[in-house]
Amino acid sequence: MAKVKTSFFCQNCGHQAPKWLGRCPSCGEWNTFVEEVVQKDEPTKGSWKVSTSLKVASKPRAIQEINFEEQPRILTKDAELNRVLGGGIVLGSLVLIGGEPGIGKSTLMLQIALLLDNYRVLYVSGEESEQQIKMRAERLENQSKNCFILTETQTQNIFKQIETFEPDILIIDSIQTLQSSFVESGAGSVSQVKECTAELMKFAKESGTPVFMIGHITKDGSLAGPKVLEHMVDTVLQFEGDRHLAYRILRTTKNRFGSTSELGIYEMLNSGLREVSNPSEILISQRDEDFSGITIGAMLEGNRPLLIETQSLVSIATYGTPQRSSTGFDAKRLNMLLAVLEKRGGFRLGNQDVFLNIAGGLKVEDPAIDLAVCASIVSSYEDLSIPSTICFAAEVGLGGEIRAVNRIEQRISEAEKLGFKEIWISKFNAKGLDTSNYKIKVRMAGMLEDVFMQILRK
Image 1 (cartoon, rainbow, N blue to C red):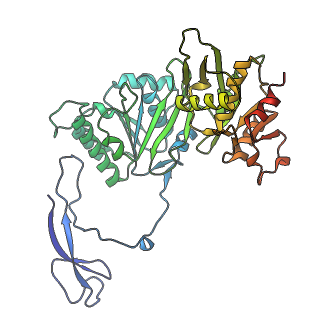
Image 2 (tube, rainbow, N blue to C red; image 1 turned 60 degrees about the vertical axis):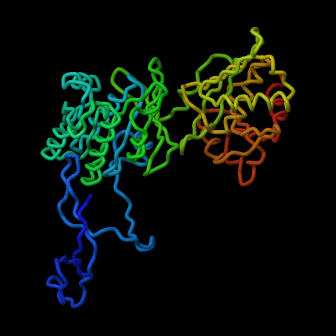
Image 3 (cartoon, one colour; image 1 turned 135 degrees about the vertical axis):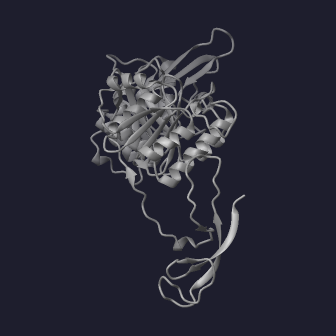
């Protein structure tokens, strides 16, 4: 427990004295010394150096009296990373990046380290040798004189090198390989992960150095280690995607310095990860002719509008119990939309197998994709194709009504930019919307049957 003692401070200049003085020797003011409780920090189990200076114990302050200054951020050359971090790297922040084995976490972090050529970056690896990291750096084709590699797993040795090297940014690959001599358990255990993270957090906050940690995930997709690990860090990023496909998604699940609904999209190439500046083009498949069951929906991820392809397949159930399968879309919401189509639309889907897929590997939570899903299912059920120049942006209610969605202007502008000729929205979005500003034809409807009567007239 920390040793508690009292000391005297001048209210005018902050001069500290071991006893009360009538006149301050620093500023010369009289009767300004008051007694306050101070505490001296004791060295903790962590190896990061602890300041031995006395500090005044915290006291409550009115929120109006607290001075606020915008925290400076480090802007990287990776626009996707800047977006998911909320505008750049915050000084003194602790960022945890998780993802499946082989998804590209180490490649992403090494690529960022090489791009930050104006900052001294220390890349600490406990999984790979220096030669393996050099081999990956040669493949990335990015050269930086300020990126330094350290292969070490003992935190005490790492902090000794940090005190000598004084990096601007620290990258740890990975937190599960680090080991502190103050904990007897093996590397990767709950106590080791917690202790090593606490030491890194103390270093980040006291030195103001941003720290990136790569973390493993368990079989169910959650970050390995104690749950308190996610509470300790400032930002949690999830690196997702199918290892057999080229595209990767960097998603924010926690961010103390920005939005948690942002995502960045990369393409994995032989030369590293390429930023995808216009993800709508890759999420919409290029096809020569129109097929039934395929529609385009306008969704939002954070501040970014995306147009994604929704694919459905409806066929007669041959094994008794109809199957309901969805990829990238909530299965419970799919069942709800199927019930709406059967009850309000009159489509007999109770004896049909329904398969739904969101193209591109995205996981959609925006309710504005509901109308595209319903149109896709009905298109496959009736075996009638919907023209590829039509897209949808509306939520569907339990009564079959088409509900308004937020930021409809951004969705319409994105559809127009990608060359769509027609977009269906809710008529309740018409308030304050000037359709004359758009070249794309904006169609409005209040019920599902109004939409189906127009798009399925064939």
